[in-house]
Image 1: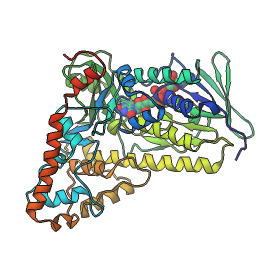
Image 2: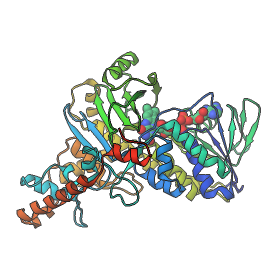
Image 3: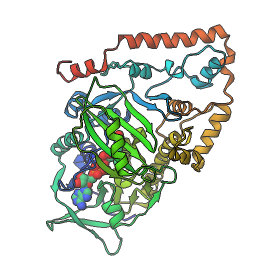
Image 4: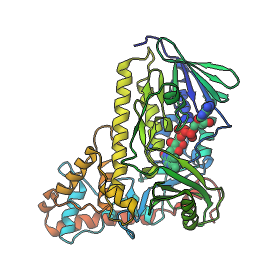
Length: 495
Ligand code: FAD
């Protein structure tokens, strides 16, 4: 333990990560800390990251962010899940919807009963028993306090950064414009003492949060923490992003469409759509990627396509000495399940809970790093699952199918394949429902399942399932169209 009390927090970088950290610290611990944030307009932000998961709502609630102000300021739309198209096989389509599918009991999860009913020809599709999925398919949505729907947002990344900045500055965060030219380390401890800007201004602190994006200016360039490469499991390394005009009502879900060397995203906001192609540069050149994306997007382009390179993996330690990397500086698993903004939010939440008020200790660092790693590894496994279980013919997909996968994932797949069991482990983001939807969607058929469904007579089983589906249909029928709700919510006329 270094014993030095921590009061001065310096955040390096003002993208989504930097401003999220600033907003959360200022709101919750502001009176105990002095918070500065250094960012450079000349460098700018990564400019993508527009699809979220429902944890964003709970995080906003913690900060007391008003949903309407946020939705209107960030051109946000509502998201009920992700539609996966052409993944296991061209022509396939399945949903990873937020929310619960069917009704589970302590004895067995719902999908076991469904598998039994399916065998007996008594059940519909798995998605027939999920409210969020059915609402998404119908293009319907209703938010607000009384809503039964579990939902997230699609948002404009730049507007979100501005929104968080406007939230954080009045709470006392001092913003410093300028390029960080040097990071000064203490000669005895190797701790960071100060950031030195091009203007020669010196920003000293006790704790430094590295939110400088992929380069990891503090955590890597100054502290040489090291990076664990996961590209052998997640071989995509490039993305082309472009915004287009909306051509119709905003769908309340993200589309993820598999392509010969990766996949394409479509994220509808209120007035425009975010699009991108994530690909593996060993199988697709940048020129071919441009041509492919241009052919496949709908609506006129509002921006020039922008190429972004990345490397899947994680910093060996998210917290090293007196520096904590959050956001892209801490590592990256690609955006297939929209998890990066969540990881920022959960990281700053953990930091607030473990905050080193009395000094930085190895025990605190280990705890923080251990939980962060477990969390990220389970997200990595979940994403690898989508790639690995495929029956497609292209070389890229063959490589994904035949690659070695993490043991943790192999064990999960075996458990589901043999006995139909799925689970959510401790510190794991994705719920059992999510694993089941994706494993079934990627055509993994369990050879066995729990016999709970056999405790019911066929007519009882059939009636129980029909009842769930009928309730869902009735609830969906009462919901307004998503675009209508959105227009009303932000006070502009629909049309
Ligand atoms: P950046 O946005 O890169 O910000 C870095 C900051 O550091 C900037 O302010 C920059 O000016 C500053 N900086 C850097 N160097 C210096 C310096 N020398 N001096 C001063 N300032 C400096 N996440 C999701 O949750 N959902 C998604 O749908 C999603 N899609 C994505 C798609 C792609 C293709 C990629 C690559 C990422 C996606 N992400 C997504 C991740 C998401 O974009 C990031 O997690 C999020 O934007 C946070 O980025 P950041 O703030 O860490 O980094």
